[in-house]
Length: 472
Image 1 (cartoon, rainbow, N blue to C red):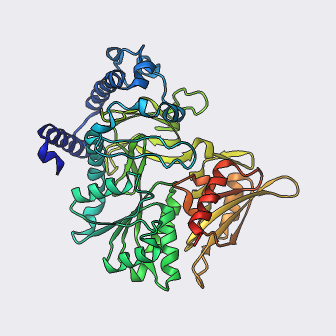
Image 2 (image 1 turned 90 degrees about the horizontal axis):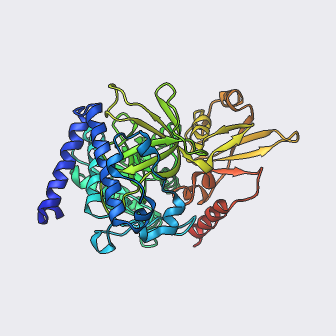
Image 3 (image 1 turned 90 degrees about the vertical axis):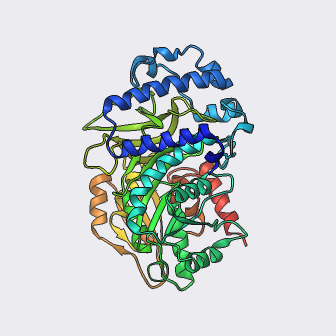
C-alpha cells in the first residue's frame, strides 16, 4: 500500500510485476534475458562503486561499460565478495544510509558477528514480486478460503514480513506465530493452528517436525485434527525424501519453498510442481569450484559447485559476485517445467560436505539417500562412527510417535553399501531441541553426530542453543 504515496515506487512495482508475469508465461527469450543481465550488471557495478565505501575501493578498476557479456572475461575478472567481507565491512557495504531503508534485519550471529541487512523499498518489491508470482502457482490450487501460518526464527529476521507481504499480495489471510517466543510457546501455537483452521504453514523443516511432535504429544494427529494441507518449508536443508516424509506426517504437500539468505535475499523459489527455481530477473547466477573459484563446466546441462550471485536490482545492499558458501546443482530449464527458469538443488554448505567410506557426499545427497528408505518418523539424526577395523559405519536414528514405529525398508542396508561402501543400521532415539537448531546454526551441527572427530565450534553452539531452548 505504501506505493500509493510514492508514484515513482508505484511505477517500479508495476514494472517488476509485469516483467515477472511475462517471464513466467514464457515471454522472454534467451537474447532478451541476456540483454537484461548485461544492462543490470553494469548498473549494479556503477551503483555500488558510487554509493558503497567497500565497493568504491574493491571495484575501482572495473569499468561498467566493459561488461558486454554475463560470462565474459570482463565480468569473471570482477573480484568476489565473501562472507568475511560482509563481517569486516559491515555498514561500509551499504549503498544507502539506514535512514533510507524501510526496515532493518541482521543475520542471526550464532556462528559469527551478526551482519546488518537493511532493506529499502526496491529490495522488497524486487524479491517479494518473485515470490508472489512463484507461489501463485501453488496456492491457486487450494481455493480461496485459506489462512496461512507464518512461523519464523526471530523478530530481526525477514521471514515474517516477507511471507506476510507475499500472502497479502495473493489475498491470503496470515497469522504470525513464533513458537520459540516466550509469549507464544508451542501450546499456544497449536491452539492457533486448531482454532483458526490454519490451512498452510511457512516454517523450517525442523519446525514442521517439532510442531508435529508437540501435536502428537498433546494427543492429537496433524492429519486428522488440523487443516494444514500446504507446508512451505525453508531455512534449512530439505531433500525430496525429507519433504515427502514431512508431508506424510502432516497429510499435506510439503514444498522446499525458498532458497534465500538475509544478506542476499531471494535466490530461488518453489513452483507448483515442487521444483525450486532460480529468479533470473533479479539475480545473476554463477557456479564455481569451491577451491579455485574457477567456473564449473556443465555436464549434461547440470553445473555443480559453489553458488555465486550478483543482484540485478539496486537497493540498500546489492552484492557483487557474492560467494554464498553453498553447494548447488543448477540444471538448465526446459519447456516442460512449471516456470521457464533453471532448476536449483541446494546441496548444503561447502564446509558441511562429508567424507563417508572415503567418498565425498553432500548433506542433501546423504539425507536423501538415507531417508528414501524410511517413513513415518517425527525426527532423525545420523551418527557416523568407525568399527574395530577403522571402517566408517552409519546409524540412522529415528524418533517416532508413541506406539507408531517408523516404517523401514530393509533395502536401506544394501543400497547404502552400494552407494557409499559402508554399513548402515537403523536405531531409535529422542533428540530434544538439538535437531531444531539447523536454521540458526547448520544442518550438520543439528543432524550429524560425527564421532570420528572432536566437537567443532558450530556443534558446540548448536548444543548450547538447544540447551537454552529446553530450559524451563
